[in-house]
Length: 329
Image 1: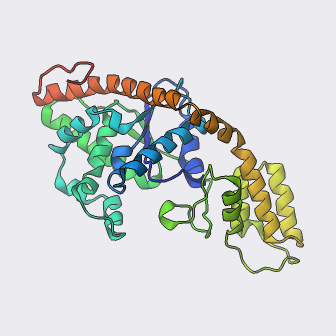
Image 2: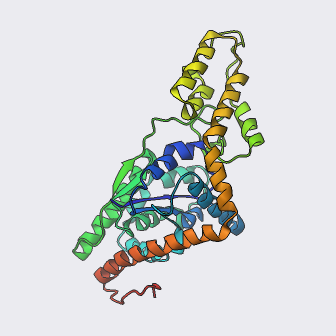
Image 3: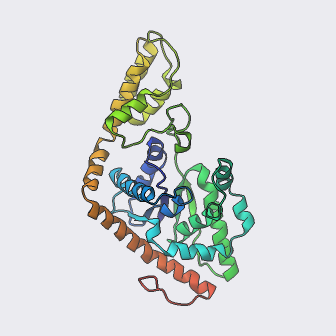
């Protein structure tokens, strides 16, 4: 089973990224056919600062490795290091109907938020389809809001296969990520960069504690009992704490005499301890920039090797019969 997923380097990873997706990506890496990429080409639709994009891409690689992605078990690479993606995208564009792209809710949502409606944003699903199809991906782990993109990928692949009369492109399946661990932001709404309510995984101690202490709460007096089941702090605490720890803190809520500040401190302590090993691993990778670059280059070479196989099939189907070399020329 070949697993494929990408993550955009549009900002530092936060708790929602980890519990909503990254943790589950890592759980799927236990075979040598897991491909994970940093989607720097996709990020160009919103980031137009070269230094910022390079820094965020590096940080994304560091964070993924720190959080447990193992380059001995999975392939990690930068999207832009695989030029076969761009060629496949163009070949797919020639069979993709305009009306299919107009249906994409992600495009409509971004335009509604004021993002420029340029061609890159409009054709974003075709690049995503190329990302997926280039490796004969079987499974693509996604959130519920991304399922439409997998359906569009399948539509594009089926249309290509029908037009050129063969099974040239493998049809992937979406695997909807478990969203049972609801990750709330500082304001009690879903944690999201677009809402400005995130808590970053690798914040230093002081800014992390400051953010946690700013979580919105109600005005229940210290001495009064409180309901842990309706409290943002306790909901987040459950992500990090053992069942026993959760039971102890829940009892303090219900008994009364505990202020929200004490609960926030418990959340800080639990979160800081939870990511302690990841912080150590990240520092090790930071101190080895050549090793980090080596992982990404090796990942790109492996991705390109598989990608050339698929691209050659597609080129042959289209009548572009030149044989691809290892250099992609």
